[in-house]
Image (cartoon, rainbow, N blue to C red; front, side, top):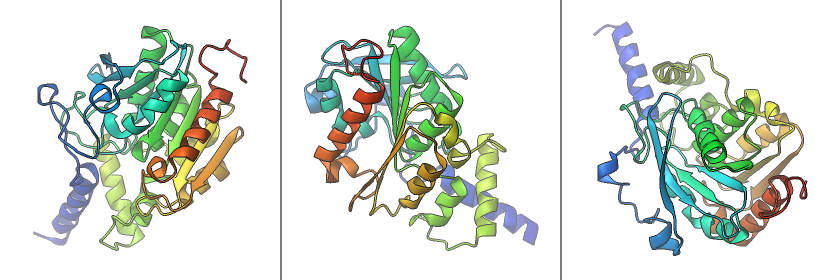
Length: 305
C-alpha cells in the first residue's frame, strides 16, 4: 500500500471512530433499548409516571420513536429532550419528575440511528443529521398534540443539535443546551477522548472525512448560527469539570449569541452531570427559564413573558 493508500486508510479509520465510537449501539424496536443500569428502564418503572409510546416521521420518512410523559396540568406548552451521541431517550429521565410536577408534558425520543428509532447503519450524525430530528419532534408536539409552545433541551451532541435546529426552525420557542460544542474540529482538538494527539491539520482532514460521510459538507456549525436563535431565548449550561467538552465551548457560544441569553457554569460538574452535581440549582434555573419564556402551565399565552 502506497502513502496515498495509507493516508486514505487513516482518514477512514479516524472518521469511523467518530461516527461509531465504542459506546455506540443502535438496536431494532423488537430488541428494545439496550440494557444500561445508568439510564434506567422507563418513566413508569423508574419514576412511577404514566407515559405513552409514540412514533412520528423524520424528514427522510423514517420513523422516530419515544415516550410522551403528560404534564400534571394538561398544559399547552411542553418540552422535547435531545440525548447525546450514542445515548437515547433515557438521558433525560432524571429531570422528568420536576418537569411533570410543574405541569410540562415531556417528549423523550431517540434520534435516527439511536435507541430504537429507524436507522440505516450510518452511525452518529455529529448533530448535522440529528438537528432535523429535533425539528420533527417539535412539529409532532405542535401539530399532532396541539401544543402552542415547545422548548428544546439537549445535552452534548443533543445540545449542538438543538442549537442548529433552533437557528433554522422558528417553530422552536426556547432552547436549553447543556455542554454543547462549538465546532466538530474544536471538539476533536479539545476533548480528553482525543488520545491520538494528532496535529490540527490531521484532525481537520478526519473531521472533513466524517462530515462528508454524513453528507453534511459545507453545513454550518453551532458557533456559526447561534446568533440566529435570537429573539428566542437561549440558556447555555456547562460543568466546569467537563473534560469531554470543555466549558470554553459554551462560553464562546454565549459570547456569539444575542439576547435574550443566559449562561450557567456549574461548579465541579462533569460532562452531562450537572443535575447529578447540583440537582436543586438545576431544577430552579430550568423551571425559572421555562416559566419566563415558555409560559407557566395553565397560564394564558403571554402572561409570563
